[in-house]
Length: 396
Figure 1 (spheres, helix red, strand yellow):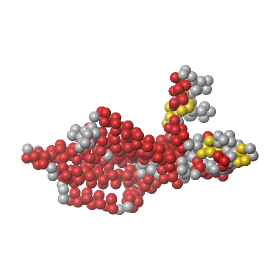
Figure 2 (figure 1 turned 135 degrees about the horizontal axis):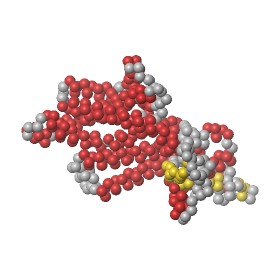
Figure 3 (figure 1 turned 180 degrees about the horizontal axis):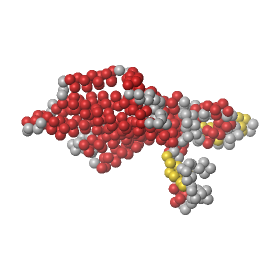
Figure 4 (figure 1 turned 90 degrees about the horizontal axis):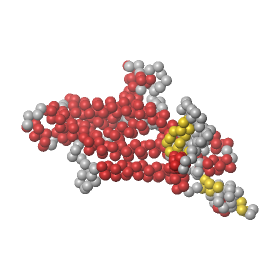
């Protein structure tokens, strides 16, 4: 089993890398103008643009004319047919660019005592740093003051347009904290309420509480979410005097989180109610439940000792996935309540053509989604010993 777990883990890692590579290749098909901010497009000369693209590793100096653009008084044929139109630069191989992306993914940066990065000292990628350390050299020798220290940082480049010149990891980290806080609270609320009401529906099937639960589920899934969010926002502001917009700087910021959390919980609660009821009703019709009742167990004992445990197994598979994806936030809720989280960030990055930020967010979503499925399978084996991860035919 351990061998199979490691196999699945490495398969998940490879899948994440594959997604990143595909997105990287697709983004490199975009025109090079999208690697500049709007100000740079207006102010930079062609030479300045090509120089920046060279620093970014997207273009390189033509090896035929050595960057001159002409050979013996004639325009260089090598770079004339490229995108630089004879200015001495040619497109760099996408494979080489991808290699640079993975090589520089981990960096050693220098920070002062206040925790701010020292811009005057250039960062060094991890592999170069380890290589120099192994050879007895120090890339930061004679550059570090007493209050300076070196940190290992994850590097996905810098935002080009949306959060200009800020590290993508810093942008994602700041947004992710807000989405994670709201998402986890709403997930706990929806999971607890959904399972409890789902159990009650199964226990009192075809009675009033079951009909109410089914009606709630149908309404939540049938009515557009924006309509439900509008009703909740108006009701919360009118009857409970709750703030209509999220504000982290408010006197009581917790109150500004109430309405977004309620809106996030509405749909998830209905989903957990629906599936808990379905799985429990399926279990109640099985032979071992009839046998347990014949042995003298009460309905409550059968429901909580046997039915709920077995019915929760399918739900548990998606629980890690749901927890990890809370970092992604909700586009509708966060936009509706002006929450500065991850929800609208990918849409904004795409509309502003911030390619490095799009790349970083896709990497985050791919990692969370694929690892969530892997952890869900592991959780199922812990809850239900009948499930084994062996890779043999006929078992999970």
